[in-house]
Image 1 (cartoon, helix red, strand yellow):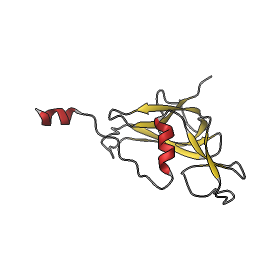
Image 2 (tube, one colour):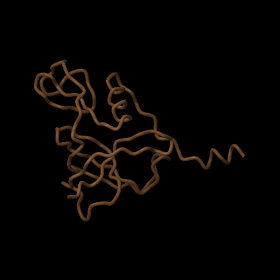
Image 3 (cartoon, helix red, strand yellow):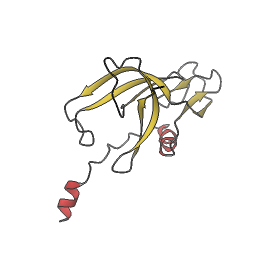
Length: 142
């Protein structure tokens, strides 16, 4: 019976690869707020996390909340399973955040008609069946 219970359980979300600067990012996501590194010198935001500002190479930065708004820069719909936690079809989007960084994620809810390029989106958080919290986007309709 235990084997049956395990087979019926939802697949685990793939484990995150944690670099030196990733823990604060994921801690903020788990708390339901998106914070990215922001340079204290030139005020540039960046993602993924890094030791220095990619714009000016300053090493002083602060984890700063972002708006969560952006627009779709690119998208794809996969019709093949690559990971058990993501059964097909599923989408992957590249979002240009208002603050500048490019962020890869998924679009939840309704899909845009026609091309998705330029569609406004806003951040949301999805709790996966195994309890992992992931940043996702939804269409930002007026």
